[in-house]
Amino acid sequence: MSLHEIKKQKLLQEPFDDDALKLARAIYNTYLENDKEFFMEIKIIKIFNLLKLQSSKEAIKYVRFLLEELNEPLCVKNFKYYAKTYPMRFVVFCTYKINEDTVEIELSEEFLHVEDAYMLDPFLKG
Image 1 (cartoon, one colour):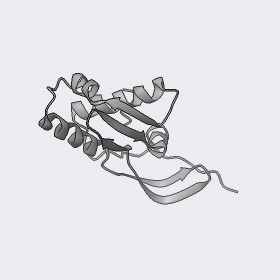
Image 2 (cartoon, one colour):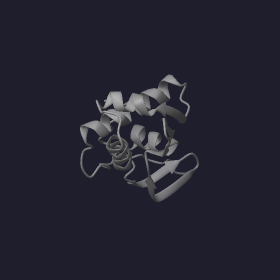
Image 3 (cartoon, rainbow, N blue to C red):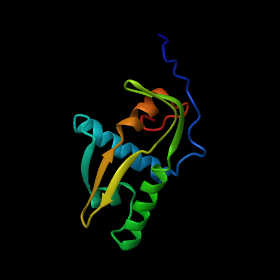
Image 4 (cartoon, rainbow, N blue to C red):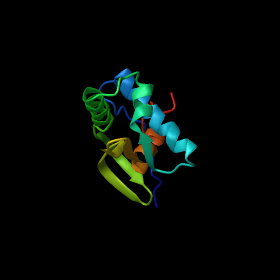
């Protein structure tokens, strides 16, 4: 029986936009405040306030753009998750749905594991 050795990897091809980082950290902090519940519903106005945006269709498009930036898949090599090892695995930050007044977000448990154990350049706790 061999032990799985975790090697830190540079997973981000380029740094995230400052607003994307702000949004990611706010989502992560909401996750922590909600007793580590992966699913959350955030009022869109709170996101607008965080990013200093005026409520508009353009602001909603911008929030969608930031979420898409955060969801660019990360390729993790030799990834072990629970009892299964993958030679290569793509993980994303979250799934989301933008509604009229809220954004439904489900943070990826796999992503949090990658950020914690595999990333040379973690960004959520920064």
